[in-house]
Image 1 (tube, rainbow, N blue to C red):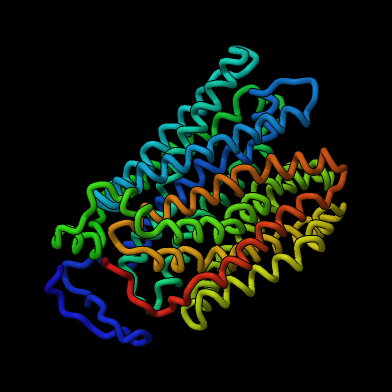
Image 2: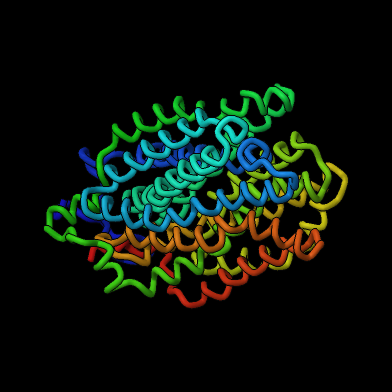
Length: 444
C-alpha cells in the first residue's frame, strides 16, 4: 500500500491513492456500510417506535404518563452504554481493522434485539421482566456505540476527497432506512392487529424480524476487505497499542468539538423521529397509525436531503452547510411544533417533515467533517467517542426530557426549546473548526 501510485487531488493538491485492481470499489464499500447501518438502526429504533406498547407491557402503573416516562428512561439508559461501546469498538477498529469491529457490532445488536422479542412481560415476571428489558436495551446501546462512526470511517477512508461528504452521507441513509423500516413495521403491526392482539403476542414480531435482517447484513459485511488507510497503517507498523490513550493525548480537543457539533444531529434526530411519534399522539391527539405514517413520510423526505447536503458540502464547504442549516433549525422550531400540535393531518406531517429535514441537512455533512479532524490511527476511536458522547447527552435523553418538559410546564411548545438549544450549540461550535473540503485524510 505504501508504494501505490498517486494522483493529485483537484481541490487540495495533495496526493491521493489511485484505485487499483486490488482495491474494492467504493460502491461495494458504501453498500456494505449502508446495509449494516440499516440493520443496526432498525434494531435500535424499533424499541422507541414501540414505546407506548412496551410501556403497557413492562412498566405497569396506574399513570400512563409515568409508564411512558419509564419506557423512555430505559430508552435513555441504553445511550450511556454507547460511550463504553464506542471506546471498545473504536479500540477494535483502530487496532484490528474497521471490518472486524463492524462485524461484531452487528452480531451483538441482532442478538440483543431478537432476545428482546422473547422476554416475559411484567404481567408474568414482574419487576424482573422490566430489569431484563433494560439489560437487553443496554446491550443494544453498547453495540450501537461502535456502528455509525465506524461505518462512516470505513467509507471516508475509501472515498475520493472530492466526493467524501457525498459518499459518507449515503451511509446515513442506512440509519434513515433502518428507522423507516422500524416505523413501517410499527405501522403495520398497529394496522393489522387489534390492541389486544398486540399486547398479547404481536408486539414480539418486530423484534424477531431482526434475525432475518441481521443475517443479510452480516453476510454482506463479511465479503468486504479493510480500508486502504488501515492497510497502510499496518504496513508502516503505525497501529497504536492503545488507540484511546493516543486519542486523548493528541486529539481530545477534537473529541469535544465532535460532541458539541453532534448535539443537533443527536438531539434533533431523536426529537424529530422517535419522540415525535408520542408527541403526535399525546399532544396532537392523533392516532398511532397517523403518528407512524407521519414519521415514515419525514424519514422518506429526509433520505434524499442527506446526499444533497453532502453534495453542497463537497461543493461549498462543510462549515457553510452546518451553520446555515443550524440557523434555519433555530428559526423553524417553534412554528413547526405549533403545526405538530394542531389537529389537522397535514399540520402533523408538514411540521415533522420540515423539522426532520433541517436535521438531515446537518447530518448529511457531519461525519465527513468529523473524519477529517482525526488521523487514521485514532479515527475510529475519535468519531465513536465524540459522537457517542453527543448521542448520550443530547439524543438518548431527548424523548425523556421532552416528555418531562411537557408534563412539568404544561406547554406543548416545551420540546421546541430543547430542539433550539441543540441546534444553537451546533451552530456556534462550527465556527471553532477548520474548513476541510477537498483535503486529504491524515495518515499520521
